[in-house]
Every structure is written in C-alpha cells, then in structure tokens.
Length: 136
Image 1 (cartoon, rainbow, N blue to C red):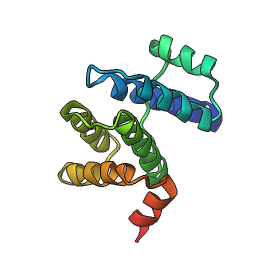
Image 2: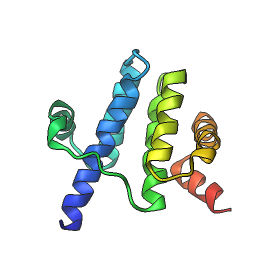
Image 3: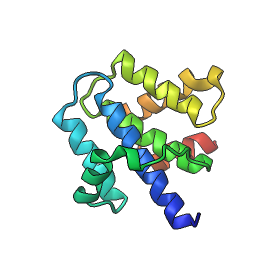
C-alpha cells in the first residue's frame, strides 16, 4: 500500500473516531459538529468528502497511527472534540482513555495522558505547545 493511500485511510479512521467521540455522550452538539468540520478543513478534507466518510464508514479500516507525532496529533483532535461543548462527560473521558491505550500507550499512564490533554485543551494550548511540553 502506498503512503498516500495509507495516509488517506488513517485520516478516514481518524474522522470516524472523532465522530464516535462526538456522539459518545449522547449529546451531539452543533459545537462538536463545527469542530469536526473545522478539523477536516485544516487537513484539506472538503465538507463533501467528510460527509462521504461519515455516511459510508464500512468502506474505512480503523487504522492506528504509527508515529508518536501522529498519535499525539490525533489524540489532541479527539480532546478538542470532547471540549467543543465546554464539558467533558465520563463517557468521553473513558473513550479517550481507550484511544490512548489503543494507540499503544501504557494503560497505567492513560489517565495521566488524558488529564494532561484535557487540561491543555481547556487552557487553549496549541498542538505545537503540547508537542513542546511533551518533549521537555
């Protein structure tokens, strides 16, 4: 599989996870929908393409990001989705913990990583600032 196809599959999987995160608290708000489309736009995915991904999830494999940068990037987006409505439900936090573990981080560190990400997003930190915090 060439890298472009792999990247496309990774992005499809990422947006399906973002959508799952948005609906996991049984309160899919317009703020979460806006965050989903904004994230797609930032990655060069049109509204039409995102709609296609969300309407045809069976065509996508839920791939796991490989690099640490991509893992943090995707976890950051998931955290932004959680915080889009200004609240973090127990289901959302639990789901984010599952993704942290699924992405290959040690289970005993998952809650600490989730808390770090949620606090960073609440404080308005950018992805770059979070990457820098993690490197130090």
